[in-house]
Amino acid sequence: MIIVDTTDLFVKVSDELNDFSRDNIKNLLNLQRYKDKESKLSLDEYLTLIILYKFSQLKNIKAFWYSQKYFSLNCWPNMPSYHRFIVWINRLHKILEVIFNKYLVNLQSQLAYLDSTKIETSKPYWFGKVHKKAKKGYSSTGEFRGFKLHILLNTKWLICPHQITSGNIHDLTPVKEGLLHNHTGKILADSGYVGKEIYYELMAKNIHFIAKPRTSMMENNSLGLSYLPEWQEFKELYKKRINIERFFNDLKENLNLKVNKLHSENSFLSNIYSCLLASQWKNSKHFAF
Image (cartoon, rainbow, N blue to C red):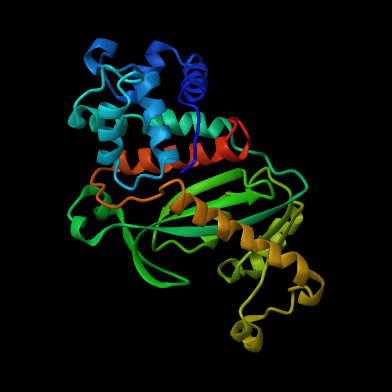
């Protein structure tokens, strides 16, 4: 469990919301009108709760709601019912995305790691709206149905750009569409990012793209991999790519990057962006853990 002071977190969230006008908040919440009395809790409190849930490591949001309603009465005396709590939490995805994008890091002549992780939908809930947009894809562990989260991570575990795609999208597609635009440096990637055209295209933009091919790819001369550098000189450096695998494990195990039992697109996005924002704040030392 990651222990964070609730008051410090609330103050941080309140400071972020001060940059939003009331009309901007209504547009982001997709509401014609917005009154604090109707929501029981203020918007600051809802945002604090969803981020606090990520730090709590509880796997079930209903268990988190129950613990806050009945065991933290001093913090949330006006805690709403579970149904109203979920409705408001799901409305926050656009606000969470805007706040998270403010903390994205710009990579300038530094070392970074590029990879994607699968976000799998749960089989019993395939009838939901989220499942309709989920596609069948393949990862290093086999076939799955869901989405992919593409992230460029620097050596301090801070997220630079990111992109969410369906599971059937090739790893190179976001890179070709400009995921690394305005970033420079040395980027380590796995065999899913091997491509001759993208290698030279990124080299022209001052990005040294190091994507190690599999042994079977190196043995197939028809793939034309002769442009790749000698791997012995990058062997020790490439070992550092394990950091992004540890980062993804931290998101899933410690910050609850799960979409199981989520039906709507709003709940899916609220879950993703609250997790990414919690990670960004944790790794940038905004709080004393």
